[in-house]
Image (cartoon, rainbow, N blue to C red; front, side):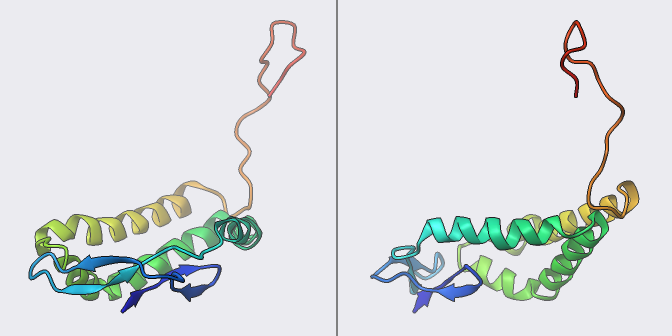
Length: 139
């Protein structure tokens, strides 16, 4: 079984035999993973053209809503994530830090953003600051 990667808006497999991935408990093969054939320049361009452009069009609160939605989705999938993590040999307690700690961090960032940042696309910080002795350079 090929383990796919989500790039450029779609699930893709490498175009050759990949690295075998094994269950750490019983040694059985889980699948193969490969990035061979993935055009990484296209991945970068996609991130810049789609991802960055999409984020720039959102306010801080809209971005926070997306973080919260991702955290909710991952929370709904947490049992599947625990099952996958167990294949690495991790215990449920080992995995808790990453799975529930990670989603908790997303929830916290979402809440902080909504509480501390304006519902705008940009944030102006303070006034003009002189950066040179004669005032010829300011920021």
